[in-house]
Amino acid sequence: MKLLHIDSSALGGHSVSRQLSAEVVAELQRLHPGIEIRYHDLAAQPLPHWTPVADAADPAAVRGSEMLDEFLAADVVVIGAPMYNFSIPSQLKAWLDRIAVAGKTFRYGPNGPEGLAGGKRVIVASSRGGMHAGSPMDFQEPYLRALLGFLGIDLVEFVRAEGVNMSVEHKAGALASARQAIGTLGSGVAQAA
Ligand SMILES: Cc1cc2nc3c(=O)[nH]c(=O)nc-3n(C[C@H](O)[C@H](O)[C@H](O)COP(=O)(O)O)c2cc1C
Image (cartoon, rainbow, N blue to C red):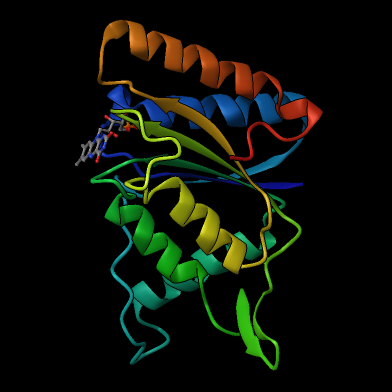
């Protein structure tokens, strides 16, 4: 069983999404001893923006195709995803640009688009400073759900801490509810919406 773990927060040791994604991975390790883990810190080692490939040996192209291969090989993907300006960090967008590849993770057929990367479990550790669940200004979680759905992943689970910058109490409550969701990972879906 292969697990791909992605972090994208720029806040290092202060990051809530990093803390939660690590706790999700620890719980999955506990549930599945021997699970094989690949980790990428997209803030420490940012991916270059996608550009057309002039030379397949170009290090940026090689790294991009490694990202795609690891995503395709993973049974479980854990993504640490903060909200930045109502959306996701550009570092995470650069990774999505490497894994959304026509002919590999989606294709257009006679019936329209078809996702080719189904069958994975994807868990997003989501953090946001304010409260956004259900808001029309939330372009973070719905975007991730839509993009991953386009790739064939019908159900994206969210472990969410929001309102973390509103007050100490809000942050503590948000972490407690995220940890409660992590505690349910073994029994199925943590939080689908
Ligand atoms: C560049 C930047 C943009 C942000 N934009 C928003 C935002 O639009 N809405 C919001 O609620 N919080 C926003 N925040 C707050 C973060 O979502 C919050 O601090 C969250 O915990 C960040 O995740 P992290 O702790 O894993 O880094 C922003 C933070 C940064 C650094």
